[in-house]
Amino acid sequence: MNGYDATAYKQDLVQHTPDTVITVAILGAESTGKTTLCRDLAAHFDCPWVPEYMRTYLQAKWDDKQLTCTWDDLLPIACGQVALENKCAAESAQALRDKQSASNIPQKNYLFCDTCVFELMVYSHWYYGDCPEALKKAALMHRYDLILLTEVDTPWVADDLRDSPHQREEMTTYFERHLQRHNKRFRYIGGSEEQRVQQVVSWLGEKSDF
Image (cartoon, rainbow, N blue to C red; front, side):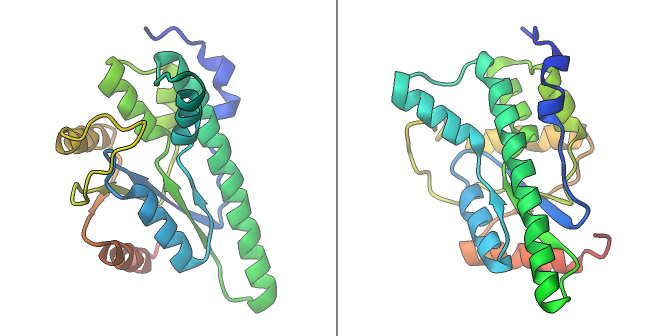
């Protein structure tokens, strides 16, 4: 199944994150509060956040043709996600420069990512038992300062795209195995919306190696 030419997508899957931007990737099963947490953290820190490109892409496909995701969609989705992340990272760096010119206090700015290509790789293995080589290479090469895995402690909210209301715990364990297998350090995040934000704020405040 893995028949894509990795070189054709190589440049489109390169991560470009300025040194002044601290990146946080939020991963997890469907309907576990990833988007809400990204929005809340971006509001707290007054910084950009990266929406999930897969949702935009697949919602448009569903609205236009009543079709769901296929293997052939994976690399276009990955390229779209990386392009969006790189765009938002540049915006975060620019926002920091604007703050510095005004107050000369902040040294770093944040970027919160509602999923990333690592999550797309995990879902590719979940649904297809395989992953395009270019996607896998990008997923393992991309780096984040903090990776969060959402706990299953939020109500299920159905929509056009979600299809696994009874497999969220199993999917979360699947994520955990892949993160551990590839030596990706991560932390679980759960609780109410406010508790999640305060926990992440605390973790970011503790880190001294940014």
